Length: 414
Ligand code: GAL
Image (tube, rainbow, N blue to C red; front, top):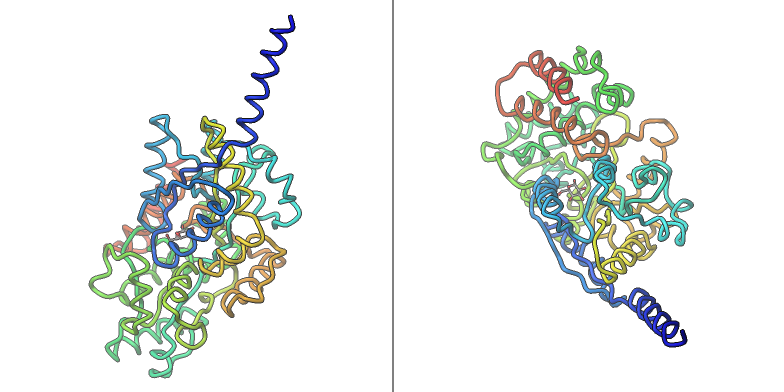
């Protein structure tokens, strides 16, 4: 009996010792491959290594994450999920429903996430009451970026209406300057589209159209006006826009080849990485209209074997929502912290504007999930909208046909 008990005790101590002291390891799938993004994710890699973690990087190039999500599906279907994945919005719940996510509730509760995250963010990180993702930041999508010198030299102010934007763009075009730097990729077309839609439909109209999929709003005269404005925007891009990566479009504004870019504030990460100064070298302003389109990056941990990987997931989740990471990462990334208790003293004027506008829009009911960046809808519905937006932008499709295609596409995606 004695031998049996001793054997059981030694086996138990081996299990405890293995799990308690397993070196944290993580293979991390993400799509932060531009200059500013790479600098940002390096912050997490360093913090992870400083805590004894072993990070295997799995970057998948391609802005907006479409390629990364394709790679994720292939890995999961082959039974070889990454340890952690840059995953956000309803896609988190979609993967949870596949039964492949790890529960990180213990980390969330031990670190009191509930108290330091806005409800609008915490809600995206939960799956049936458990915590299933760790939030990294708050990106604002509805921004206009501009080359300060180009605007000053042409006597142009940052536009506060779409009519003013069109007038400024026409003046710039006459001066031989590309008004709008753009990358002709579907997600980038969708990024411009949702900013225009927010401005023309208003916050409530945007919510009805892209959160509630209200058919009347989707086929309304106001939605036709949105596509009319998109047709005008198409006339402001250069002839080589097709397929251009977003960060190359940002570079066109940086070097004065183009005046404006409509893009999320990951674009600010490119300006900052190039040593540009907000308010001096470049300007930031919300796109015309009321409201705030948010895009919250997060990491989901996948259900993988190995005490080392489970330890890596616990460590990653804790670091991602940690105060230091939330400050240093977001200073590089162009976003603002997801945590509400991180001081913005070291952040720039654009970040302060974002934080102030986020608070005001949250109080005013105009804080809205970005549909283009996967925060508002599940993949099938978001994809149906983007298919119409990019088809319209790259053809001579009429606005009337576009809204009909929109309604049909969404109906077929349900
Ligand atoms: C967004 C993502 C950002 C940035 C951007 C460009 O979807 O949330 O963090 O990566 O795409 O790739």
